[in-house]
Image (cartoon, rainbow, N blue to C red; front, side, top):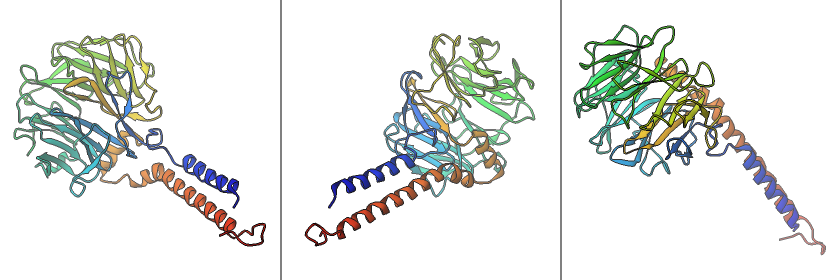
Length: 389
């Protein structure tokens, strides 16, 4: 038997296997979820063993920072070890894209999926009562009271006063669809919403709304969000610029300079208490600033450079820990597919399964080459004229 030929065949097989398949955490070939423990200075994968196309939302359990929920284009996943392993949650009940996930202070969980809103208590998921016209929904916001939850539906704002078991519509600020929602829980509850491109506020649970000075149809606001480290501070993004309000939206001040690329859509904002270090997730990726927004650096080390970043999630017990999902499929495309009631399977087959299929074909070809080589060596005559056995 010729050892050189055997080593050559094995080497060819390894090259084919390694070169033909996307790596498990190559998030430029697949979507991914990434975690930072130092407010965006360094990043690591939090999706071990997964091949994600469109992770859409992440939530961290306030009672257990290792317990995570992740909404994806194909359903809901959970992890009880900080992302080292994941399992499917209620796969026979929660079907389709999951756009929002949330934990309640008492330990219950909520998810807004393409087919409805679902609630988990003691590990069991059940459907919540939500008007059909509000499905699919895309955001949760906890109210100041323990059992009050706000839900941003497909075409209306809803509220639950029973811990997410049922939701009813509330008065909307305009006839236009609300694009973003946040709730100030410190002191008296205040709702903040982006409607018709402008930030509006409500102090009575959504019955009456008042406009602020930020936003317009010509220059719409991307999002509004409450700072977890400074509960009465509100952040917003408009026209490539970040804004801050310390008086519940009554006045807004610009923070730093504009983002480097015009037309950048901001999806998440996190900052330290001094508003010096800022992290923005955008449709171009993740930006970070250490000088109050005077300079913005696109984060590329260990992060995708060609994929969209989604809404970030902060650990309620440690604001320096943040999670960011990156999607191979544009978020707006996933949302449109959910609104239209169509699956994304055809798109996913072309983008991700093609790589897996090609890898499988290469492995089969390489395996066949090894088998043929070994078979020939086995029957090849030796110097004595007898075949090798």
